[in-house]
Image 1 (cartoon, rainbow, N blue to C red):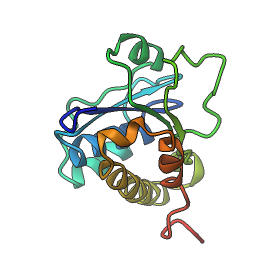
Image 2: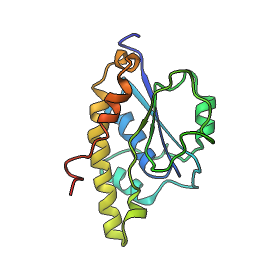
Image 3: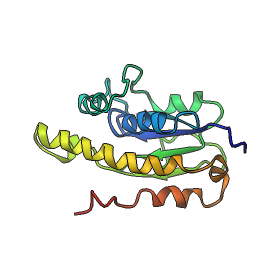
Length: 172
């Protein structure tokens, strides 16, 4: 693999309205020029979460290009294949509706609860999204330190899985 090769990562969650959208935006900013992030959902909803848009606007992200899309369309349409697929939803199918992947596809689970489902009240939900943004930032910053060659190593799934260990700010 060439050091100048762009590493393509697909982030997947159930509705593609929150976690995967945040991860896509973060990777495209933090890994600019080296990584390209994409997002999709198994049952995509009509629009990106307003809480997510609020967090991204506060962090000065351009959100005009963000949209929800189905995972089947992303995997079947995108060539070359993704270097890794990161599942962010608990309960996202590992088989069944999962579209066919290339041999040896790197699939990693960074399952996180959606704050909209985990908290009551607008203020608590908004704070949950701020915390989620911080956790994803830490994981994605660590991911962007990997080289293209690392994505060809046999231990890449383990390395990426270790990034999903509980974050100190989330431990209680």
